[in-house]
Amino acid sequence: MINFTKMHGLGNDFVIIDAINQHLELTPEQIRQLSDRHFGVGFDQLLLVEKPVSANADFKYRIFNADGGEVAQCGNGARCFARFVRDKKLSEKNAITVDTDAGQLLLHFDEENLITVNMGVPKHKPVEIPLLAERESKLYFITVNGSELAFGAASMGNPHAVVQVNDVDKAPVAELGQALESHPIFPERANIGFMQVIDRQHIKLRVFERGAAETLACGSGACAAAVIGIEQNLLDHEVRVELPGGILKICWAGRKAPVFMTGPAIFVFDGNLPL
Image (tube, rainbow, N blue to C red):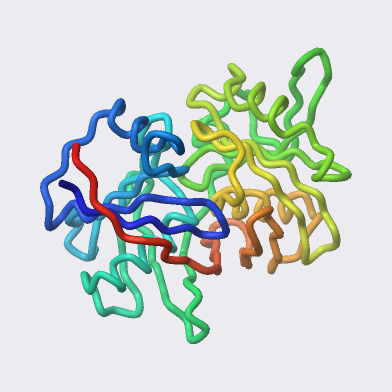
């Protein structure tokens, strides 16, 4: 039997497993079965707490999408990861450092019981995203479903493209998100954000996540949208990102600076299951 915890960050839901104190080997097929909302537990991502790789880290943080594929970054998951290790008394620290395949993250509890994640420095070069483009640009243009489309792109440890829309509620997120996510311009696929600018400190955002379709919230997607909006001079350096599941605060000082994301992490229930 494997013990697990169900949590969510603004409706972006996770199963989190302590892989330090219990032995665990999951196949992609098992992950897909667990993610099924009718026949399994149901989640957007599965998160594993493992022993650190680096001497200065407290844990290693691994992320698997509902389709069974491993990814390097998940911002909402990082906040739930921090809440999990605190609740399970795996760490009593107010700030923990975790290894990920995209580098290290610093997770910090504040006085309001929210969690701030240092999401690292965003990457803009096409080869770093990765994106098949000859040179870096604040806007890229491609043809999708017979229409030309403009988008900004950045990596937050995972690839993101952000399309500005007039009304996020009417945006064709499912159709266009799916077409863009797997477009050949993205060699590793991409998370697709649809951003409506309300004012310079406030955006609305919906995200079609790579390997998970549209979710209620995407932390790294909120960071990428804020970064791209700031790069395009649409936004100030502190941005309130309104997602279907709730609100995140994103702060970014600009090039070569890390992105800071603040928001909640909510416990849902504990359980156990046979594998």
